[in-house]
Amino acid sequence: VTRRFVLLGPVLSMAAACVTATAGTATAPVVVQVDVAAGACVERGLRSSNLRVRVQTHDRIAAAEADLVVGPDATLGRALESGDLVEAGAVELGEVRWVLVARVGTPPPWVELERAQPEIWVLGGPAGDHARKALQRLSPARVHSSRQPAELAAAHLALVPMPLAGDGQTRPAPVEPLRMRAVLTRRAAASAAARTALRSLDSASLRQCLGAR
Amino acid sequence: MMGVLARLPAPTIAAALCLGAGCGSTGGSPMAPSESPPAAPIPGGVVAGAYVLQIEGAAGCLVPLGPHRIPVVASPTGTPAQPGVQVLPAAGGAALELEFLHVADTLRGGLGTTEQGVLTAAGLRVYLRTIGTGAVTHLGSGRGEVLSGTMFGELAFSRPGDGELTTLGVCTALEHRWKLTVS
Image (cartoon, chains in turn yellow, cyan):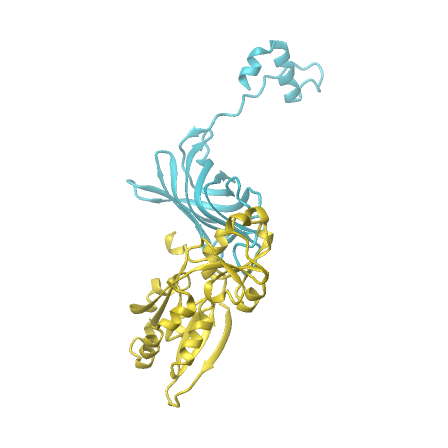
């Protein structure tokens, strides 16, 4: 049964994709798949690295289609267990906290949520698994899931990882943090370009962007 | 129930049993003997064949009211030293699997679905990640059943096609309930 206890989340869906190409080499770009929770930060970090990369933001990692993946264990778990990732040499980016964020005003204290039963938006997909469970005392009709950062940012009240908090006021939420990592895929284990991209992610500025501890 | 009956006068009991059995409508026939009460479940039994798995969220869970029924098929597994039971969906596939040790007239083990969940007979999608236990009993020469099992872990409900498995509620608790009854 254990092998079938796989992570929550429906089928793969690509949330966004962009290309950052700078150095004019003839080699194929390093394909970097990033979980939606870290997408903007990683994209920004790689853009400034002067590397030829293609960044794809996903809510589910498909390691067979990437050279480098970045995300929380909840998203990388299956690829790690299946041996599609080279765990040795992975870059630990730290733990990313969850916050309640209000677009207007101040988010309510966590302990008030059950009584207040507010409409709340929460990150969907495997990365949001623990957060949705943490809201199990709220009526399911008042809990909305989304994998779109823009939709979460527009919500009056949202429960998101720190990088998706936007400009609203935040309050720490007692949800298990996301342990964020960057890992080479097996297909890119011998790729110097992929290793260079991996090393470039081992940076204080990226950790700061993620709000990682 | 039996204590109440013992305090009633015999004619009252006979009349009540007669009404319950529908006798007297044929007129003049001798009073038929009352049916014996249902036999009490006997511990133990072979768990094999077609069953209905019923699951219910623990008290306080904000999930759709149950019981939620799923037709399943049980097969003996394991070894003589460690006998077991495997339960799979009657409709085929492996979206749901229960793997139990069957020791001391008790089933203990995991109840789980894949990340796609499994459809109940009522068309809800349920996701299970639990560990459960339940006493096996049987009636007469019947097959073994679990009439009152408990399980701890995660239970989530959604509609088929929903983007997440939790749209109708998710609950992690120690006292979810389950049954495995002969179909």
